[in-house]
Image 1 (tube, rainbow, N blue to C red):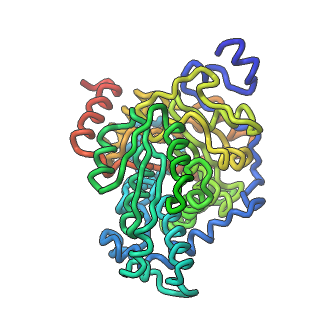
Image 2: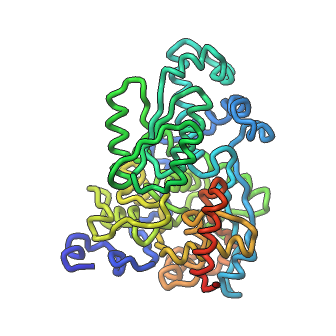
Image 3: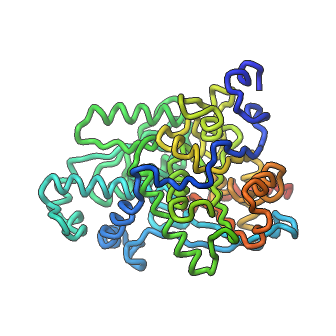
Length: 440
């Protein structure tokens, strides 16, 4: 870090601007904060998903077996834990597999589906097609489709959110447009186009694509822009995952209380998905859940924003980082202005991961557990080690009186995507992972 950067942003941890992996503890974290100081209530999203379940089952055959519920498995990963951790490492490691979410195959389905369902309800209601209490399957009727077909949805995305928006939008008869940076992964652009989704490429990074898409949508009264940086509907869709996890933990016999703390590790791009999930969990578990975001060393936008204060925007470019990472879903230079202030008191900390580590860990997960996830989704796999095996993590445990409870702790690592990655791309990822792990 140059003296100029250090002088301008004294809260930044040493080594961050040089791309060094590290764990940063949030000095603003308040264990008593639980998100209830805001008007954002995840129950609204849960209610929407419940009343639209029949519609989703009708539109997407993949959801019929589960009655239209959008849910993912929670899987114990003891072999990976043993491969990464020392014998003394405590607690149970679980993988929350949003990579296996039906239809869209990523965490982005939670927020994306919720926002478009909300939009479709509003359009249909304004057209007189959705009286109070009406079965939401009416949204798939020819009359509703004719109305919805006059409208479009647009989003700026590195791929997964665009696919989520595009699939639910097309399923409800809306035209979908995804704005992407020109250097976004080509296979993701091809997959979007193959699903009939319009892809518009822009020079610049993710934020530039979002800004361009927002401007275009604002000029079209029939186009709704899904704003990943500021959307409350997206945020609440992600927050609805909290009750799902609560039920799964109960079914697995994993208690969450003072003697059985819950640690959650969430890959972070702009912040909407991890922020929403943690927000929902804090409302359920309060001080007993400890949330850590994980970001690439080149793109720690949430860490930068929180460390510098949320009063004004600060990007990774401002501290000299280039925001170039193969974890393209996390390649974001500036944190969400909606989410960052909410996380200022709710988030325990952020750790950063370099390219070789997340490639190697994605390979190790598949090698030990037979589970494939994309490299960006593997960034959180070392989360428990950050808490248990680093001086900063030990300091956090001591500060919050958790050291004696770690034998009973539950560690949930959120896997954000990967099931839709083409096999030829997977093979390239595997080869890179073997090399990073020191295996020819």
